[in-house]
Length: 477
Image (cartoon, rainbow, N blue to C red; front, side, top):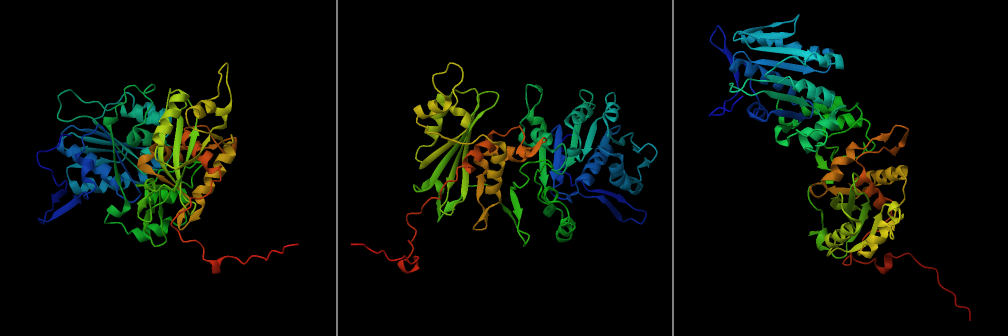
């Protein structure tokens, strides 16, 4: 669909017999960009209650009205969900339009200009095969997170249009962040972090995400909606109300980018946007702030990772910098860590204990190479169960009404991204399963270090009358 010279209102109205206008669809301001977007693959992501499915259906209807002979497919994972959503409304909507009709037996809509909308489902791989030989101008995936990546790619391949036509083929989707496909959906549409070895034709410019929240929908009573969510599991409430990506099998389901206070205010929690201040000064400006480094070693395909963590005088830890290396020698990694630490009050560097093991005929271990290049190392423990416990402790300990550990999101994107992706070990849920864990494991080395807080040199010492009374010393002469 090409962008018009003047932006339309996208209001869909018909004139009744009495001369009055019947408004069948009028998008809210946050929904208009969805209809205007020309990106081949677009995802409308958001909390529940933002009208995403309604918007998706009318996006297809509008295009069918604009382009004669337009062929659109709207698909959900289960037939039961399809019946409880689109099929409940489309019949009445077509009657109000008066320029087409809905056929219940074939679950499709026929327009007078030859356009068609087919409603369908894909509950199994056998259902997926039904779309391989079909051809569509538009495919809309409702609740994309319920589909597998294979299903999305194979069904999307059925979008094909003629060269030089009036419109281009489009894939549109809507979803909330909860579901078995949430991880791949985030990789393809948000992070654009796709394995090019497996998908060499992936182009990040072809995948776009638009986010919406419940507060943007003026037709929804937020307080009433929150009451209905109170009895649901915590991870479901966070996904449906806050729009957080939460995997149901996540090891760190207690990792929360945002939190809702009892008064309803939503505030940053484990992730902040900027470096916190201490008495009006940024942490990086304070020479007395203790800074610790944490390293998890790798070369390829596993990366080497270093985190920089500042510890405040109240014991809170702020992860404010990260660096990742691949195919980089230990001496070069250590040299860069030292260079990136200039001006900081570095107290200790906790590292992967395997760095102290000499391999093959190498004269020095990785840790020894680090120390020779100005990065002294303290070995951690290699225990995936203890890693989890240590990080959980920092995530859930509250100091001065804030979590003990916070991450500066823009400065530590990989740590923030991989936290919710880590799974429980299926053989032992107490342990972290193998995965993109190098950034969190680095943090675990720090959390297991039991570091002392920084000491503010300008803080008032405890007055003499407030100090505990000491027992008198008796001198034996």
